[in-house]
Amino acid sequence: MTRTALEGFGKTPLAGDEVVLEATGNRLAVSRVLAPFVTRVIIANPLQVKAIAQAHVKTDKIDAGTLASLQTAGYLPQIWTPDAETERKRRLVARRYQVVRHRTRLKNEVHSILHAHLIPKCPHADLLPGMVGRSTVAGR
Image (tube, rainbow, N blue to C red; front, side, top):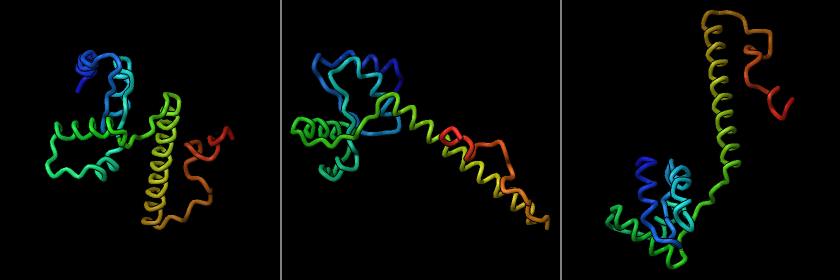
C-alpha cells in the first residue's frame, strides 16, 4: 500500500461513492489520501463489526462485502475520526507520555546502580533536573 496506489484507487469510485475501511494503524493516513476522491470515508470499528457479522470463512473479499452490506443497511459501527488539530495534540500527548516513561526507567536504573554499589540514596528529589517534568506541564 503506497500513496500512489491509493491515489490511483481513489480515481476509480464514482461521484457520490463512499469508502469503508477497517480501523488499522494507518487508517487516518489512508483516509486523508482517499477523502478528496469520494463523498465520505468511513472507518469501521472492527470489534463491533466482528460482533455483528460472524463469518465462518474470512477473506478480504468476504470482509469487504460484509462492510458494504452493513453500511448499506445502516448498521455499520463507525469510529470517531479526529480532526487534524486533535490528531496533532494526541500525538504530542502520546510522545510526552513515552518520554516521561523513559525518564522514569532511567531514574530507576540509576537508583538501582547506586543501590547495587552501596552508594547512599541521593539527597536531591530529582536526579535528572532539566528533563521533562512538572515544570513543563501547563506552562509552569
